Length: 615
Image (tube, one colour):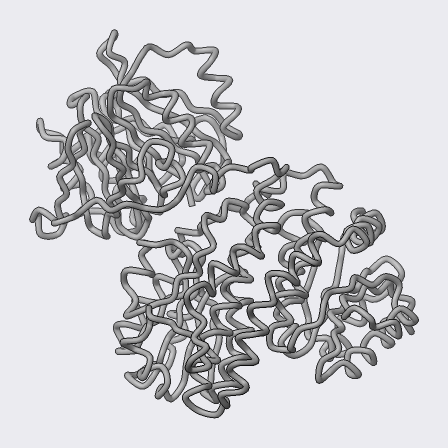
């Protein structure tokens, strides 16, 4: 969840660290800090501050730090200890000779802390992380790399760490287990960070560290060892295709706004090169070696968290309809704790935007241990899920910086559609049906653009925002394939506007939630002209009979619905199976505009972080 970065080279380290932290702030923003080696005084300094990066920048400007060419930095999402200056990273050892930043959780920190206190170590913070820097101090006998190795062998939990010491001021030690860490190489400089967004302004040459890797980094070289075997690891730098423009706002007010508007192009990138008209199917080369295992699976388990879980529910609907394979969808956070029934005839699909979600990685490990075929659906090339699954499909939507996911959701739904059609063409779907699906999928980007650029639609949403932004509760209701869209719409609203919102199957409303309906409870229905349209209309009438305020997402040309609801947002027609890609767009805009109206920080909602890399 936290973001870490380290730099060693010939440029001013503090400036580079701060710029990197700004790129990583979406990973956590409770507090931040830097440590650097002061050449003039031959010692380490730490500057850290509660709040966002701008607060740290103000503190640095006050302190006027001495020139430095090596340093580490951290932006925090708090796990152990409340957000304050003391608990902020980096952390010092007793003698202020070693500094450390950490992303992850040290599960046995209490035991280690008791051991270290008995040895005379004094602790300043409430964090689990501080234990690790004192442990390194305890083992230090003249070789920083060896002391970090010995310390990590005692640690239970997850970590991505960077260690700096005045004992060896020309070296940074990096290590990872369960938390992402990459190293970038440029002329006379090296950079280590949680993800590529902090590095691309300096280089596109990246080395992905693996679990149990420990690296000794100087400005000219990097050596990587395996902590468990002490053997040198063969690792190579590779070129990534992320550009600086992709991680900047580009004239938009927020990253979330930018990413909403990027969806037409992002979805083109998702299906580009995958349309196989000759065979009336979709070409998914990333899973071709395991395609038959998936096709012949007795059942498919899909596991994910948050927005990816909602996309997975749509995936279940599509795979069962087109491929006629039984599908279950599990929260990754619950998956391994219920002893899931998995065997060699089970296929497990793991869905994660970052490819680093801790709970999803745990589900992957459990699935592999039980012999399942594992398939990843993720966005980040080189991520842990991409590397450790048997095969996978990239969504190719580019970096997603906004904490509230938008283009990742629509791309994941698109991937599930292509996958389900590819499976279905081997079973029950005809050639003509396949061609029709290809035509429909190609039209989706233009139809999303139509929604985004329709002034009447945006004006309508603005008027609805005026009615709802002071509300404290909200219901989102849908049926069939659009029930998960209701869940996603509710999640977006609660994430960034802090309005309590719940998504429900519309038919379940009368089994409890209808008790909440009154004039002050808005209810939004996804009411498209599909196979269960009349059922949805009946559900709307049940709300209106109780004086509820009803908003509907409806197809253009549906004038009947205007007679029974208070406000309508129209979207273009498409086939039922692709309708979530259109119906979710107004919900994203509604949530975004509501948060902006309330004056909230859209890209950095309280208590959240983009990539959940701790359990």
